[in-house]
Amino acid sequence: MVGHWIAGAPTPGSGERLGDVHDPATGRVTRSVALAAPADVEAAVAAARAAFPAWRDASLAKRTAVLFRFRELLNARKGELAELITAEHGKVLSDALGEVSRGQEVVELACGISHLLKGGFSENASTRIDVYSLRQPLGVVSIISPFNFPAMVPMWFFPLAIAAGNTVVLKPSEKDPSAANFIAALWKEAGLPDGVFNVLHGDKVAVDGLLEHPDVASVSFVGSTPIARYVYETGTRHGKRVQALGGAKNHMLVLPDADLDLAADAAVNAGFGSAGERCMAVSALVAVDSIADELVAKIRERIATLRTGDGRRGTDMGPLVTGAHRDKVVGYVEAGVREGAELVVDGREVVPDAADEDAVAEGFWLGPTLFDRVGTGMSIYTDEIFGPVLSVLRVSGYDEGLELVNANRYGNGVAIFTNDGGAARRFRNEVQVGMIGVNVPVPVPVAYYSFGGWKASLFGDTHAHGVEGVHFFTRGKVVTERWLDPSHGGLNLGFPQND
Image (tube, rainbow, N blue to C red; front, side):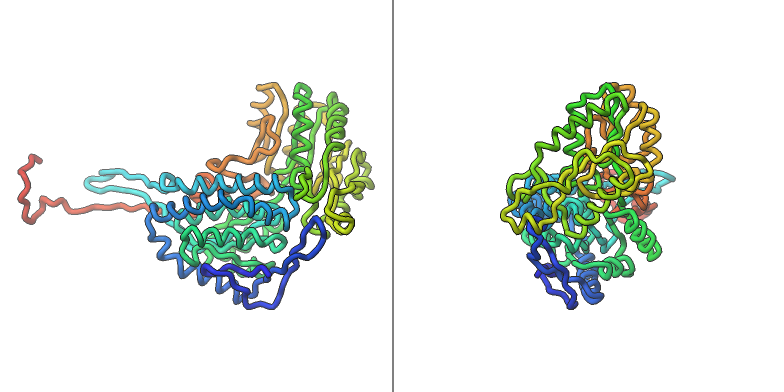
């Protein structure tokens, strides 16, 4: 059983409710995970609250020393972590390793947090009065993370939170919980004091417990837009600072002057990597009419070369995370056919590369799926599918493509493929999306820039990691200070000085 990690040690928890953890490539239940009761929420928050004063007052040198040790341990054992992710999420091993490496970038940013925590100082702002600013930690902070990146998404938040002097309660997805406990054990080995990093497994009981707990100062969330809205509204109603990153419908606009081979490669990589279970996956390819037929043909040719199967067998794409989610995505494929889209590649017909016949039959399989001539009113376009379904929409040119992108309710990520620098510059200025790629299909920022979208893709004002992340996990103080001049009295045996 996967239990909680509270006050520096694994604990089974006080509740009797358990959840099943599957191997998506076989459909078999491999573990059980404890689902928190209210008493477990209280225990995790209490441990973090008790650890906060000492960790807050620890020197920056001590905090960053622990961060550096954690970084080295994670580097040494990232292969083990990737195997855990593949076993419970289903993504291929190379993708899981890439996830850990991208999360590690934020750990490395946190190792240098001393520079980002510096305040300002103004001498003699008024006569003999100095003014200066400080940044201090919030206290107990909570992180609620999704199933699709069980290591990277939590690492967007907790390295900066811990480096800044906060204590953490992480609530990972109950679908793939083991990565969080593995990370907690690495923190312990790195010398992090007990209670600074806690893992609370569970479902809505755990989420609501953290959102409503008076000792939790902030909530960082990544997930679907309806839940992000709920987290934001509930957390702020209870007086918490909230950053809630929601869903996406990421577009890729391909102009006639683009390198179509590069664009086709990018569409396949960004559309079907991690079986499309990425908030930055390209799910809507917007092609100008004059090149659409050729581009769709090139994408279809590339899909035919992909191997779908068990991620431990060197395949290109793995299964979906659960049977229920696979069935939901299949429902969208069926809806797309009913609504009149042209089904170019049907992923329901995939023959997976799995370990045995039972795994072929019971794994949560759906192959890459390609639709052409999709309309903006179809559910395969309006909804975030979160699966390996790529929809091609055709437009007359740049202006219509831009209008289509900006009309969408999401504003997470977008890409433009073109060799026209003027068009790219105009697009960068006019598109209403938070993260933009120019000939880059998945524009996830490096750690020292911040991650997050616009519109229904973000609730709250603060994006993840980068300088915004540091500011989210700290709050400012301004001190105005005056001291008596020592010449006002007292002994002074020093060499006489002129005034």
